[in-house]
Amino acid sequence: MSTSRSMPGRVFTFAVGLCAFVVGDVATAQTPDQDSRVPAALVGKVTASIDSDSERLEAIFKDIHQNPELGFMEVRTAGIVARELKALGFEVTSGIGKTGVVGIFRNGAGPVVMYRADMDANAVEEATGLPYASKVRVKREDGSESPVAHMCGHDAHVTWMLGMARAMVSMKDDWSGTMLLVGQPAEEPITGAQAMVDDGLWSEHGVPKPDFFIGMHTAPGPVGVVVSSGGPKMAGTDQIDILFKGVGGHGSMPQLAKDPVLMAAMAVVQFQAVVSRVIEPQQTAVLTVGSIQAGADNNVIPGTALVKANIRWYDPQVRDQLIAGIRSVSNGIARTYGMPEDQLPVITMKGGSTPLVNDDALSNRLAVPLRGLLGDKNVVTDFPPATGSEDVHLLLGPHKDVPFTYLIAGVADPEVFAAARKEGKFMPYSAHNPNFVVDLEAIPVGTKIATVAMLELLATAAPK
Ligand SMILES: [Zn+2]
Ligand SMILES: [Zn+2]
Image 1 (cartoon, protein in one colour):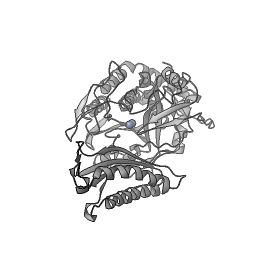
Image 2 (cartoon, helix red, strand yellow; image 1 turned 90 degrees about the horizontal axis):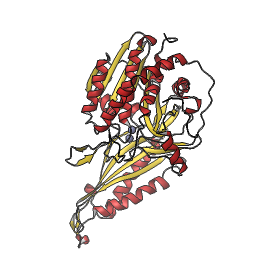
Image 3 (tube, helix red, strand yellow; image 1 turned 60 degrees about the horizontal axis):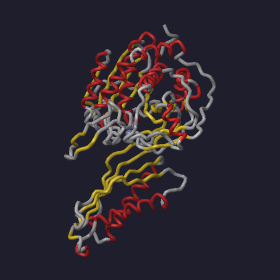
Image 4 (cartoon, protein in one colour; image 1 turned 120 degrees about the vertical axis):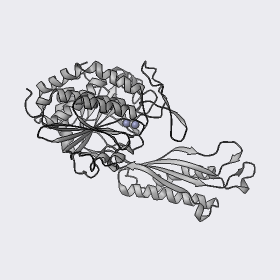
């Protein structure tokens, strides 16, 4: 397809990461024309290279889509990344942070540009009905069985990175520097990036410090539209478990028990008062309980109840207030229902991420050649902060000063997107929805976006 197809209207919606967000009539801010390192001739070379590779890329995408793996279980997917990068001449290290992969391609003097693709899928039963839909079920560590499907587009992320790597290697006379590509495990639980850092990504594997870092994510906007926008984009988040201890007993004699189910139910309601009555109203604060696990029978009061909560924030003080609120509400409820001080709820912080802030200069710089690739109105540079979250920026570990940006690329069929808008829907489907679809046209288009972004930072001169 043409990558400059026009986008159906400027009102569109993206759902990305762990949360959906809406963009209405966003402005494509007109920044003054800047010189790009990727002039039209080089964009043409990228387009030709990736178009000639698109059948192979589609096959890789469908293969990964049909064989999804949950976080830290991405053995097969990581194997594909390692195999493909090795074949292209990358130095490859596998097994960083359990299933993480790093590939380094040194091509003379110049900047080190890091690019990350996350590899994990979701515990969702796919309902797209596509001929290559996932039918995979997996046994988790706790023995439970779960469906698995790529409903966040990480299969596209891996394919884009592999396609970009091949295009960049085939055009290595046009650029100089080092590519540092990362296949990251376990983005969905927001623990994979930190796991790679903790496993010595920067200290034990000879990985050079990057000069720039690019991440990229799918969104159910139209194919051919990309967001390259500076400033805060994704919220900080924490996964928090609250285990209420009670005293189990017969459902007919609650006076002889201490009911943890009731404590959990009260907590879910009272947590919302922390958001509405404690947090400054102008601040971003979300507290969601996604799971309550307690008991099995109608007539048995169980001994414990587990509440799984998630918070979103931009200001660290808001984070502190939310966590303190969860603790004080939970303890207060347990005391109210008669639990002694040594049996108060156990609160476990399971992991999280800090807010994601895109570098202004880098985002504006990448927007220039992306306009050349996709057309001016298909590059969105003015994009509001969302309450979705990511851990991509945690990969930088000690190198927090490295300019970083996170591109968001539309993957919905533009006609499907336009039809959904006509029906009054915000979007045809959201990320993590069983009907999430990456249109196959998005495979070459996303690969071109990634390649043009890399070339902007690495290209030496006019194309040869
Ligand atoms: Zn996701
Ligand atoms: Zn995702």
